[in-house]
Image (tube, rainbow, N blue to C red; front, side):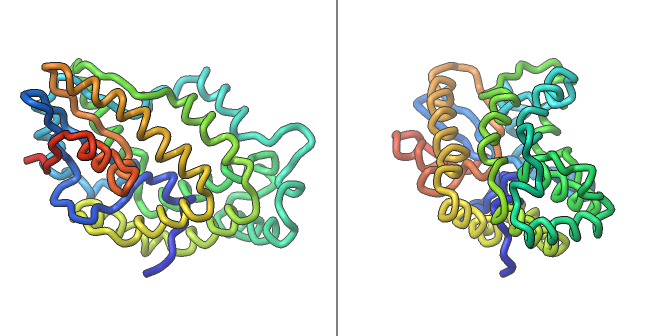
Length: 285
């Protein structure tokens, strides 16, 4: 199995399901229930239609709940705010925050992809990595029209009620310190770029079928190498979301909650946490 690092994982936020039969679950407490769906944030045209469980949960729900309102990213005000998280502080450049060998490897990769590094010399390593991975993914036919964006736009078009766990700005702040990570992150990203053509289709296959190899290894790698980052992105956010999910389970409304599938499984995942608290967790039909 080829290695895939956490840099790609953060963009996909996709994890495999060790025993899954679908990527949508029904969570029940007494007579109240919600649907919980795992999203892959980047898909190809041929990946549609999505698994039928998603449409079923959408049709049966009263409220659609997402991580954040993705459409905020198109707001000029947000784009201006985002710059502070993507640009290095005054006096610093990629040449000063990266080692000489790492910078040379990155420079060669940027040139190979037709993206001169000189145009991105003030970007954080996190910003550079995201730009390169997204560019490579787009060359493979993937777009930002993932599961969450598809259903968010569908909900808005139909005038459905929508709610959000957090803001895009909050997510950017969360990643800011991570964006200052240098050499190791860039080197892993370069490795990722070299295997994306083979890895991306297998990731989508695993998401649809519910197997558990490629992304599971990437998650473990992130947890081992950057435990503080893993805690902030996965563990802490899951705890925050769990509090809100439990509130939804006290209402008669049916919510369909769609979050990155990387938040579902594992010892710190939403599914195990809900089971441990006594909720009934089953595959949606």
